[in-house]
Length: 238
Image 1 (tube, helix red, strand yellow):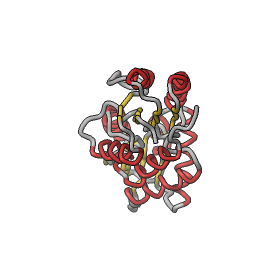
Image 2 (cartoon, one colour):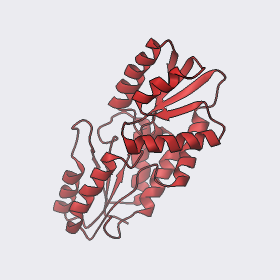
Image 3 (tube, helix red, strand yellow):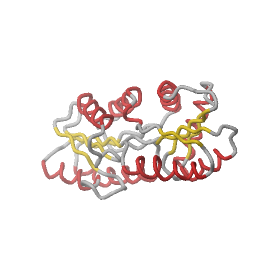
Image 4 (tube, rainbow, N blue to C red):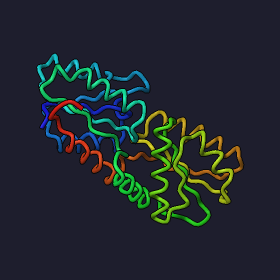
């Protein structure tokens, strides 16, 4: 087991979020690290970045560490975290980076099942889940949407915000339940999705209600993040 755990990503600067608190506690308990740091990857400059957190651990004399991101997909920020871990590796005896939430085929099925349970289908209503932009994210969203469809949930759309408005305009349903496909209910989820995108969809004549929750609130999602972390405890370079 590592001597230290770095939890990095969109959870780094969020306060008063029950899902975030539960995930941090469950990760720390499962990994059993003596020290737990939170670091940022992109976003607002709140707290240390991953290289700074790793430098701090190295200065403390920590020899084995694990970095767990709260990224949903293997996009730009996950790749930047991997570069940071590789650059810092030679200062540790063991350092590794756990994969993002949606990494293996079974991950898509597990998250689809969690969303299916949390967001039951309702007649005449389409569920729209908005995540981050980027080619890697959009590819993962398409796979997640397919996994939902295989569960009989053709009423759920998963996409970047800019694509959802056009897709919803082509749907027969005029009622939309809008939510973020993000690990934390942070600034992006609250403002870009639940306010700005909601207003845009309402301006298209849609009746929009919101699902103001994050993936970290779902126990099955937290369990998947913990499983990824345990399978990647430090044994060498990433």
